[in-house]
Image (tube, rainbow, N blue to C red; front, side):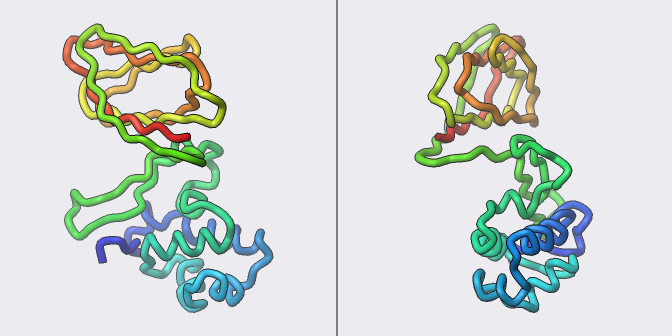
Length: 189
């Protein structure tokens, strides 16, 4: 049951799935029966999800997305937000109130994804050269403050915040604080 989305938490977990699924299915010109056949998910389940009255696994949402020719993100994100870089949606809750998964952001990938754990001492800086077009990074700050410089513009990210951005530009990591800055960095190409 750990990978099930529960409708009783609809206010955050299933807030957008019902409307997004219905909209995407209709945009694809599919009936609920045709989507059921294409995805392997029962028509009954699709009806319940579109009504916002279902428990569905994350893997079943993946199957629905694939059958519609879209990404998982397209099913769960707020449709009023244009950017996939700032999704910030709860997609799973466990039995314990402290247990949850939040999809922070998404970037397109075609060949490789790398996960890094970075630490910068006080006042330290890392200057990067631009990557080819299509490369992105996702960072999540776990400790301290990280200053991200993108093409000359800077923004500070404190612990618990994140950023998703293209690396086909000049960029740098800077620790403006007096304590170490630690962050997880995902490189996506």
